[in-house]
Length: 120
Length: 115
Image (cartoon, rainbow over all chains, first blue to last red; front, top):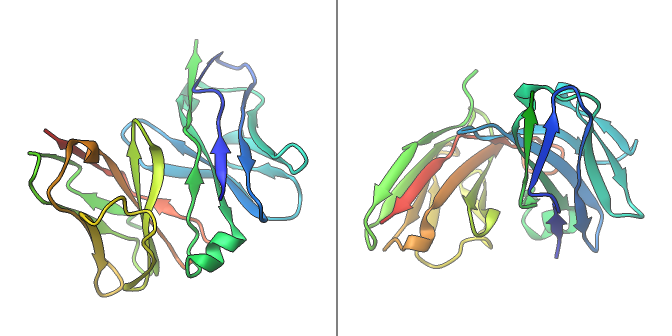
């Protein structure tokens, strides 16, 4: 079974400051990792994903994340946040074994989310 | 192009009634997913369709929940005899094909409130 832990339910930060949102996962098989953002009253939007290759992944809106297999982490970072980054951020995982067992579907297991609040 | 659409956006129903939630995926997307977002459980997978068949129904919480997809396009999620614990936002997502390499595009969700 796979699981995702987002330890911080809320992260307040001032505009133009750097931010890191933490994500740890557990899985007995190869994993694929994702970060999604949800703006108020909207659906989820993919920020970035790690499937293979370079462990540093760059996404939209200036976000990046680093896959660390030894620490089973996939933390999300941005060097300078903007008011418009205020949203909820979800880390998610899917696994190759899960895909085989689920007929090829990419079932995502999500963390509980981190509310990023950017203040002036 | 149009994204994933869901209807209704909000639904208030009385306990014990049946409800139907609709999802219109992006045209040409063969894979369709339903998720539920609730305060107590976070975001959880419900069911996955590849075309009109559902290879994975493992997330459906009880036999009161069912879903179908017709013509490889529109999907409906039906909840029978609704309970208060069914109150949640139901999200639909579609992707061009199944598998990890294909991004899932999410709709805005249907907020269901059971009174």
